[in-house]
Image (cartoon, rainbow, N blue to C red; front, side, top):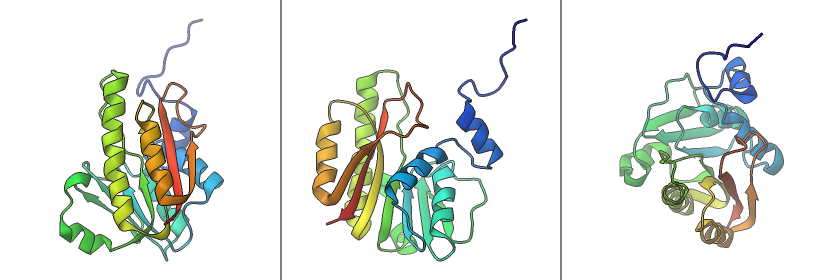
Length: 200
């Protein structure tokens, strides 16, 4: 007997179903959970900035980790439509063209800057890697300006020829530097996460 393929998302897997069951908008939440379990980036009461926060899984989980005494602020080109707790908020905006009033509302400094941003992919690995690098450099620029001393930075990047250069730049700005690929990343994915902790 031939099994019918389920309709819907052709990329759906165990993590997709788990996210639906646990009421997260995307499976990407489990990448942050793995990063947190291994590296303890986010603390209770912390201030977190989530760059490229839509559809909101990282934003929601970061808010759970900080608890009500913390503050989590997200920004993305797309609106986040899920319900967030009172200490979390999402703004629509272009990371590379944020107005001064965004920072006035968001606050001056953060303990953690997260970036799970990814470009619209073309299928050309060199083009996609270059686009990913541009987003990472924009996120790193924000991290340098908006992280408190001792703060942490987590950034997704697609593997390519410029990864080492970017990774070395992050290394120079933090006491601790790690490269990590969560088990929940899809096997075919070329994404890795560069983590810096203890900002100089």
